[in-house]
Image (cartoon, rainbow over all chains, first blue to last red; front, side, top):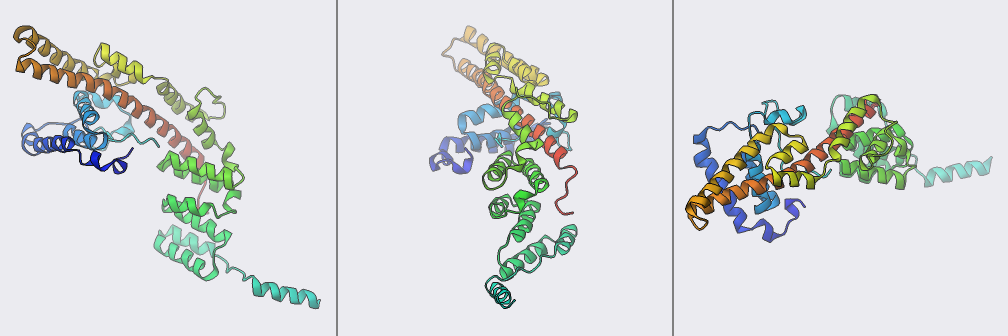
Length: 99
Length: 261
């Protein structure tokens, strides 16, 4: 089910908001000082923010951490050419399009 | 003679003849990328001469060209002429499948319901059916496409519960199973280190200690995220391989067809 079709209670879940707020604070104040080099097109915190929005707190957080532990310099070799963008980063879509 | 003349005048009075559609002009507009003018011309014909089968044919082509798939679907239902043009139907299916598989599936259903089901034996439709039953014969597939199908078939066989089970036993091994060997060490090492920290803190400080609770929580998050993530990743890989295979078939099928001659 897409985010648009979810109930209002789901969309306004305060726990999800707080988690996304934490991610935002991390991106604003900590991430810039760490000067990280992401293997993915979307950074782990950005990915976690989007997955929480899309799948809810629990699954979203787990998927965010999954990307975090998959992020190694060699991860790119596991993907096909069409999954890599021009900058050499892995394109990692949030949604599995059932299409 | 007189009767036939009267009948002719009566017919010409009751049934107004549609003005001819200037196909060369439409081709010119398409080649020069004047899509706005193209639509204005089609709308002008619709307003002045009313709806007709040949106009629906051109309108359908226009919506296909501009990727307006909803209008395309509603237009094709009114176009009997379109269902006789097998190359146009196959081109449409190839075009649609590149944007969304479900829209192509809807299109085939429309063809079987409103048309003559000419696309039934097309390469793309057969390949689409093959993705549902991978055990069916692949004899109709050209050599270039067999490789992509074999890739998809190989991935489709993989089971999510096996990937999850392997990740439970040895964190990261599910990644080896689903075909992500290079990220195995990242998962294994992070889980091993967090697990070791948790174990040591419980052994030395006890389970009620704050540090032990934090360490075990961190380990749990990494451990479960690896299991859930690997299942999600496998689903994504399967979906992408299917899309890639059908994309290749669509490109192969529509390679020598042009929407506007």
